[in-house]
Amino acid sequence: LLRSLRLILDDDNTGLILGCQPAAANPLSGSWERLCSSPFEKSIDNWKKYYRPIETEELGQTTATAARIGKPVSRDKVMREIVVSGGAMVTANEHDLNEGTAICAKDGYEVCPQTGAAAAGVKEAVQRGLIKRGETVFIVSTATGLKFTEPLARNAKFEMIESPDRKTETVAKILGL
Image (cartoon, rainbow, N blue to C red; front, side):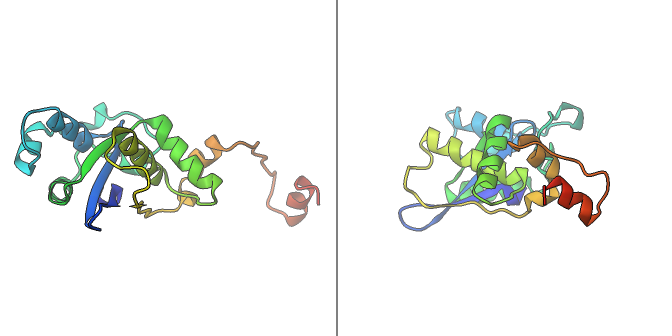
């Protein structure tokens, strides 16, 4: 889950952490949202009052399968880093998560769906005013999209052609060479 933490630099170049989880598995970002809508101070102890793990059977489906965790073991570390840095948590909806992955791919970066969730989280944070336009943002991607070919193929704007075999001559024929 720490890989879904994203570093944002404020005016003093002090790192602020933006955590992002997919809507299908968002015990941390969901509880953060409840804390933010309460009158309580944003502290780890207050956040824990709103935190509720999500049971496996309650988890929804998401392209970001590696982030589909209802009881993150790093919960306390994430809470500490968000609160201490003065950062925030957001939830990425599935459409924006897939769009983030596709936009990265369009620019030549084959990223994992979890990184797509981070891109969606940045978009959400900008819309909410948590990140101001023009600020420097770093998204940490820890996995290549080549490990997650099904979402890439599903979101591709081209037709997949299956080869009956792996012979060079067959592939060349398919490519019209």
